[in-house]
Length: 235
Image 1 (cartoon, rainbow, N blue to C red):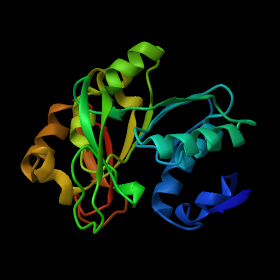
Image 2 (cartoon, rainbow, N blue to C red):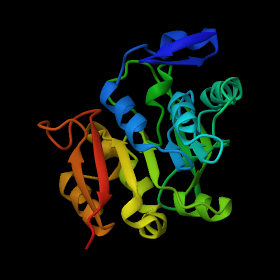
Image 3 (cartoon, helix red, strand yellow):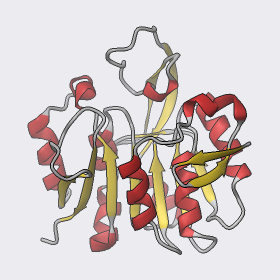
């Protein structure tokens, strides 16, 4: 069915319309609309139902490419349908049904009745109990090498594993250089489960040669479920 996401209409599976708000994360939507350009290669890490991957693919056009990462089987199946529903005039999208991390491995993945909080660590402030299963964890560097791409745009929402995923993109970040734009949703409430604190978060950003600023000016850098823009520092 056709479904409005801000001022864009996409086609979605009607069974999940309650999970695709009409007006949510406006600043993120606008950032994607402004910074994904024709012919661009973009990554959508933690793609959930694939809506942001579809939006990026439309902006990139047929000459671009999008690679989406989604480890939840149910979400990936819906995302695959959404990618198929929205092919016209869009970049081809490759769906990687794995989690992103700092090394390739098998890991326990925690899945909830609220599928948008699924993660490589147990969720916080969730009343339901998780179902555990093993998933493949891949690195962004590995996937980009395999697909022979150097992305210049990355959107990331991985429920606390953001710094592990960024560490696994070290070579990709270096190769992309000053063209790279990353917008990552931050989940400081989950960081302790991944052995991360505020100091380590800032050290990781600096070690990758990146600078960070909040997506919405005037807000704190690391707020729960807030977005941060990461760019090469130019040093």
